[in-house]
Image 1 (cartoon, rainbow over the protein chains, first blue to last red):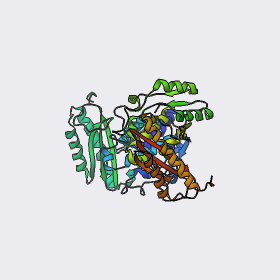
Image 2: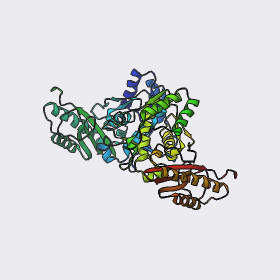
Image 3: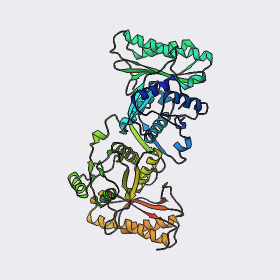
Image 4: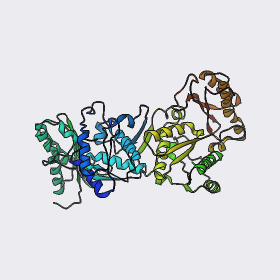
Length: 257
Length: 257
């Protein structure tokens, strides 16, 4: 969706390392915004983005118009059940249908062999992987690690919505996740206890609205009561005008660090 | 879905005439059958179908298993709104989602440039065309004319369900459509009057259940009150154990024949 930051640039670099042609799509997709969301406010620094793509050696930047992508009588939707229903899906009705529909269109328009997505939007990544598998789309989906600010905040185009104070407060999200990973490493397996601690740390840091803090199966995204397999701790928290998401993987079989 | 008849063979011939490689898919798709429909009864004469494909010079026949097409945790659906909602869509909930999902999967599995569909399933053809346009699928959809028995009955794998008497009766469907076209040619434009005459002829022919008789815009499939543009007369009628569909195009600008 543009407003490129180091997280996006890491995807470009992953593609450049692996592929002989790298295409970037920039499209603020109205179909994935709810009626009360930040479609109009979403940053669109196109010239700056194009410059960044040039500097990274991107071969093609695809910047379609909303009118081209959605003719007035377009009426087709791609829906991924289950994987898209919890977490952000429960709080943003229709969001993932908007994501899967536009991503499938882009895959059809651009004959890519590999597509790179950030793990920051972990549910989006899993929903797209499921769609690609279920519809036999001939493309490989590669997830790339979250890129973080020095204090741990996951890079996001929405971080610009934060005031200086809110920006400082927002560091609590990743700190609480890192803390949870340490507790899993030292033996804690109870998801209620782990999320309780995360919630406490976020609430201590300042005023916010917690949409969810959940520990889920890393692939199906089904909620877990116990960390008894590869899992993902996911959260969405609103601080000031920004709805921020973050997540981290936990592996109960990993050795204590 | 196999049980190949002359209608299917006309699609193969259209492909052979135009393309250098012709692939036939044979898959009785459970996702497009409703719970009370004829999934189990649907004819599956695979050896005979393969022989027919061989005789027609087909290069590849793709016959996937249900398990391969739908792994137990598959959860992605393609939905085309509006075009899929009237006519058969109103009587067979979920049917067209099953069609579009499997057809998109087949398009992704088989890298075809052109795909041939019969106009017998006219709504299916229009729904697939809309899906392909909306999702930017890189394939050309070609509709092929209905192939009819000597008495006019549209060829269908479901015609085998008919008893001898029902088979005779079923000729009324196409006769009533041809009659309607003649009436449009001689100046009738009122859709209620045209469908009233069709209904009368079908009811006169013997016992049946009429699911619908409708005159719709030839592209959007929206119901028309007046034949004031390219239109399609569509009907679905149950005779004995068979649900039969048929349709015909009408062009109000055509010269009187």
